[in-house]
Amino acid sequence: MVAEPHGPEEDRKPQADEARSAFAPPAGVEPPGPPEDDHPSSEFAVPEGLATEPSGEPEGSAFARPSTFDSRLAHPAYTPAHGVPSVRLSKDAPWQDRMRTMLRMPVSERPLTEPAQRHEEGAGPAVPRVLDLTLRIGELLLAGGEGAEDVEAAMFAICRSYGMDRCEPTVTFTLLSVTYQPSLVDDPVTASRIVRRRGTDYTRLTAVYQLVTDISTEGVDVTLEEAYRRLALIRRNRHPYPGWALTLAAGGLAGAASVLLGGGWAVFLIAAAGAMLGDRLAWLAAGRGLPEFYQFAVAAVPPAALGVALNLLHAGLRPSAVITGGLFALIPGRALVAAVQDGLTGFYITASARLLEVVYFFVAIVVGVLTTLYVGVQLGAELSPEGASVPVERPVVSILAAMALSLTFAILLQQDRFTVVFVMVNGAVAWVVYGAVAVTAEGSAVLATALAAGLVGLFGQLMARYERSTSLPYVTAAIGPLLPGSAMYYGVLSIAQNDMDAGFASLARAAALALAIAIGVNLGGELARMFLRAPATAATRRAAKRTRGF
Image (cartoon, rainbow, N blue to C red):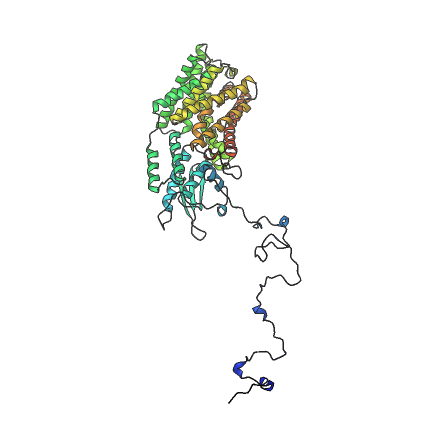
């Protein structure tokens, strides 16, 4: 049988329930829209009819700037719309500059870098040993006369080199501490160390700086065991000069200073003898356990006594040159420069302690010289205060004497032999500048001292950046010819002759000259750091940018 085609009536017949959905809308009814919960757009979408201003961000970005934003009204505590710029530090810059920059940043803003020293796979840094190594190195630097800022930079460099980024070193006059916190949820670990003994040995100081440089340099493998071994060798290293050489250097320093003030060969020998005798008495007092105050007071007596004896014997020599030469060997120029540097860089507690130490040393020298001069005046010595400040124009002799003074000062500081030549040249340049301004041009002595000390600091910082070392060996001995020995002697002698006003005025002038030396040295070093390029990258890029002047 052949099936007949369906007609229109059959098409309108209702279909089975399986052929249609129970939720299908009846014929002629518009389907409803999707429910609000199933709306495909975001609930933060702009409502219809609201126009938006074009922005620099891609359309639909969640970081697009709102139309009501005004940068002039933005609170400084909020993150700016363009984000926080990342800090980039040149790896070619000296580690001192890089560490100073990061120390002035908050911990959360310091850039994360790969540690210079690698660890075993899956092992973290040995926190107690790294902290102990950091404190031991910081102790040697602080005891050697380094500034608090440089000590903190060295401690921070060691911690970061061994993978401990979240650390905070703290340096005061006698206390070192470092705190490390692995993360925000971990307890911090703090270690501290007391600096009880201080000694002047720039050879040891240079070796410690070399160790820190090797630790913080990528590509130089220095394990903790190797660092401890090198540190032990540095501690056991003997001084480069024996005790008798130091005594001869003290005498040579005093003799050269007496020649700078117009003395001849006889005055040179007498001043050298007085300084050597005072040095031996100071060593004897130190062996008996007397504090440094009494050591300085005892060491100041022999030069003053020899000067008084020359006046009583009417030998025709300049007793003022003998006494002032002995003072040059005692003035604590190194401690004064470090104290002013700490104050200028914001370490006020350490600077106050160091300045107080310098004041005690000055008082000790004044007590020793004043007692001797008072006895001499009672015995009939006719000492003239004006005789100490009369300049004698002997350019060639004065320059040679300044070089000899810097040389002997470098030996007293236990410097490496290869640094002595540069120190002699630097000291001669400083004296030429001082003589040109103060003597030839008859300018201010304080201004001349500051200019000469600024050149010393500039050249010293240049050599330090070239050698990747500390600047103290190139600076401290070179400021020897600028020390205010004459002003100190003038003030003490005036007090001994009951002229208090003139005496205290001269002592204040000596303090002003000393501060001019310290500020000039610091300013010269800062100028070198701010405007000069790192030696390794002089042809490609500038030195790392620093914050707040550091």
